[in-house]
View 1 (cartoon, rainbow, N blue to C red):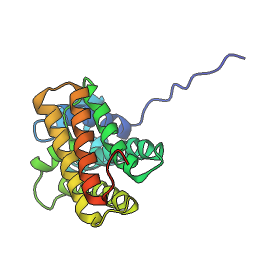
View 2: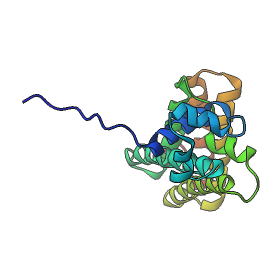
View 3: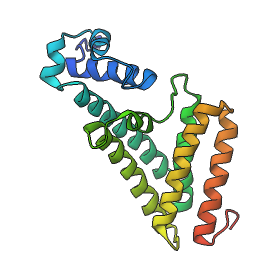
Length: 199
């Protein structure tokens, strides 16, 4: 019997989130009006208000979706490594692999957070992702035996942010950025744990 392919059309919510992801990430959340997202999604305006709410709620939903996909990508990369040191470096390796994507436009959370009103839903979503990253780095730093896991976690997050911005602004090759970020992370980890990369 021939297999029957599903012809289920994506829901209005799914189409809105897909359109929001494409437009907000490429052009910025402030630059894209809600009517453009609705037109790009091919849904009625009422669908937005009935399923998600207004623009701020849509931006929050877009960032929540990106958080879930980014966290999944990083978690899978970390799970492939055996030691906490290699797991921390795997976060940077996973990040570097994104720089070759033709649709790479930097960190969605930094960009949206910079445009957001303080204390709103968008800033909250950006803060939630950054909190997740900080907790991951800090936990791995503790597992690696860092004398001060909080400080190393903070330093690695600074590096992660800076690497993403540099990759967007400097247009260096992915291999150059990847090597530099891995070397910098290795140096921070070695200084915090007293264990060199060669050990």
